[in-house]
Length: 153
Image 1 (cartoon, rainbow, N blue to C red):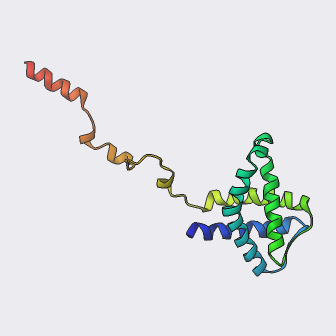
Image 2 (image 1 turned 180 degrees about the vertical axis):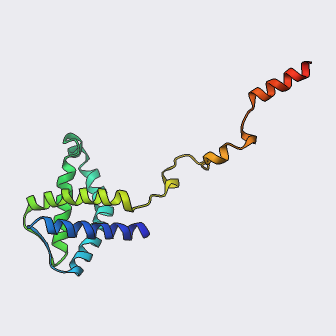
């Protein structure tokens, strides 16, 4: 839930920046900005993966460039749903979605804390470096050799 709220805040920031950069994208109020960020976050979480799977062959043949058109289409969907959020045309939506993606990636890189245990595929617990240097875990080859040498004398 915490990450979802952070995603909404990142989308709010990105939409605010993009509306300032492009004349064809306008947001009339803070309420419209908040609602647009929530709708965009929900669409990116639930609808975008389905569309990307359906359009996978086209995306494959365009080497992933069709994803930019999908993002523009989803931004236009948000514009149709939210009153007070306006996009002039598809070209503006295309470049606005591209800028949104860039801003989102940059900000997400520094803000969202990922749970590393989620990405760990092994079921074994992680061993910290300091714990792995305990004397019980180290095989002392030289000391063992010295002990064998002393036994023979």
